[in-house]
Image 1: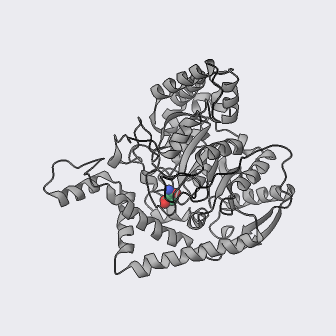
Image 2: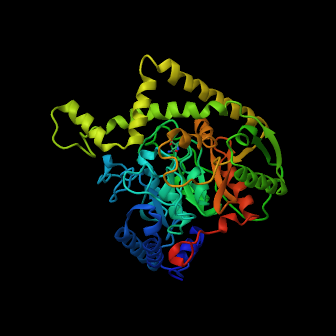
Image 3: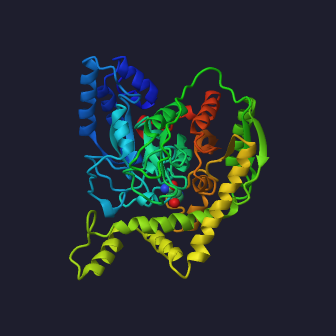
Length: 494
Ligand code: GLN
């Protein structure tokens, strides 16, 4: 059995562990051997915690042998964690020189919950620096490659989390999503990614990018695994002031998949100009399958979508400029070598510690908040945000969920958009309105264009994450897209 864990689901691994058919050590070793095999090509991890995971596995095995039957739902499951989520005993760098070598003295709440559920954290994944980007290329340390085509980006900013799942290195991973960073890489790498409702999952111990938008969420091969991880991480946490204090309902999957009585809206703005025809065709096929499952489908409109992208790139950057002020070389992280005075120390530290994209965003964010420009940019963007929220409210009077492509196009070539930030930003058009409105959304694989995965996005009402997962489950039950796996060179493929 060992050596095969890369094709088994988290649910299956958990069952095999509980039944004593596979030890946690065997599972961990198998995952580590898969990582050793494919990492040279994929580059998903910044840090593989081999010793830690084996030690943890031994403890789980000892507990099971001693007759402990109080195991949580992820017992024996190896999980990768995005590197902007704090983990005791492992670096948390946000893929930035600014935090190279930084080890957090505490665990994020989501990590605490992972540990309590019996999960085995196997390492930290690569990302765009401070979660700012859509390709992974903004990492200060390495480029993660798309397992479906190693010349292409895996998407971002949860690049390594998506690639690690797609490459079979782990069955599940945690990502964060401020404007699409779970869903877009999930779409590009052919996996499932859920951005929960704003406030469902604690962000305590998650490095802030844009606090009114950030959420943590799961990535995995299938909806059931993703739901399992969501249930573990979601729920009340008094240490996060934005946490809504809600516990998700218990999720059960089974029986005949049916969407009878479900009303789905298709926003015409996200099927028009700028959406690749192949992507559009795959999502339209998926919509027909949702209809076959019993859903009623009607076109609708989100008229403010046109302005959502601009509003996001004002609000997110304004918040980032404030959040990133803490990296000043004083208390932790990088400090520039011997400098003249305090001001020079600040500016050299930040000049050398941050990468180009992060600096661009801090400067733009500071500009839109400055006294002469606040009204023209920041206030305007907040007004647009209200319009986006109202668009969704209106749509949800008639529909239970909305269906869109997750991204306007499939994964692009490494380097293709690196010098054109606008082109990169435009790819976020389908995911960003969801964050502005704080809604839950899931990306599920819905086919391929020229061998590259396509994602369908389902958007739900506030705190309707469970319903969304049910819908996505029904879709996966009658399709096979999520079962396709990329073939990596070591296995004699591409
Ligand atoms: N691609 C978007 C950005 O660059 C979203 C990032 C994210 O969700 N963290 O801001």
